[in-house]
Length: 390
Image (tube, rainbow, N blue to C red):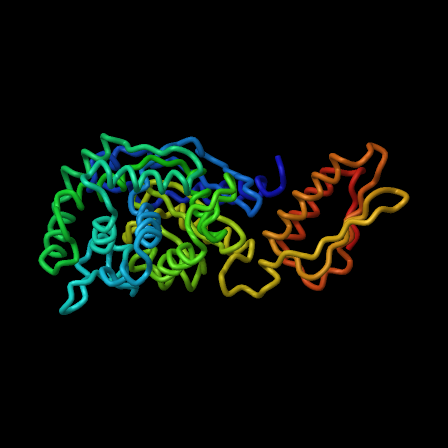
């Protein structure tokens, strides 16, 4: 097992005993979820996907669909047109609250249900099927594979969705939702019923982290500006009435869903996703939040962390009589360590068997402790072919 995956396993083991909270009960299909499922994953800048736990478990994306439908709306119509219909301010209220601007009826932001329904209603299409197809295609591009809908969860959502219908009718009365209220709400229910795994969510988050380019497929999904706008909204509004404290303590733009998922964006570093169905009073997964919080703390991912935690070092390779010398300069952060290890593996593969590869880190100006630990662990596993100088 590589050192980064080993670190993820360690986090999973530490979080595992947390058993507070219960699966969402107001959607019958979600109430049947296995409360003990637990998984999380990380995707780095080179598209390497690392997952641990119940990473094959499928669950519906629920409100974690909202950033990607917002991305589609921004991609299609631009910032001004979209934010004329929905605001960009934290509501400080639960996800299903009636958070509308006085006089205009504009929802507070696209992450609460009212704002998400308004955003979904913007997506072009002659009917529910066309709109849904466009949304699923966008989500699939973010995930790097074809996604589909869990029809049983959709039926359960639709059968219990009267509050969302009421919100949509209120939006219609203000002219925020144009056209059929039925089509807007049913499309919204269908987007929430798309099936994903923790791997999918990590790749989707990573696509936002790397400016709209999927690091696995290398395809550009949306522009850097769209990715930035979506991530900005996630930072201030993504965790509902816990968003402010989340940003204070964890410091990563994030979005939760009542199925038990949490995805987070570490810009230019990683996409992170965790899954566990047990929810707290805010409707956020207890263990998924704890995993992302621990990861952010240990690996220095907070947006306002000192610079060395995210820095990528300067790397030069020189030949010596014994073998290649990889010199590191500048600053080394956790994401930078992943880049160094990727390059180091390529050098080891290409070098003659008798060669000894030296990684010279003596000239690093600063380094994050987690990055040094990862680097040292991997180099130790390659001994005696690779050695580290500090």
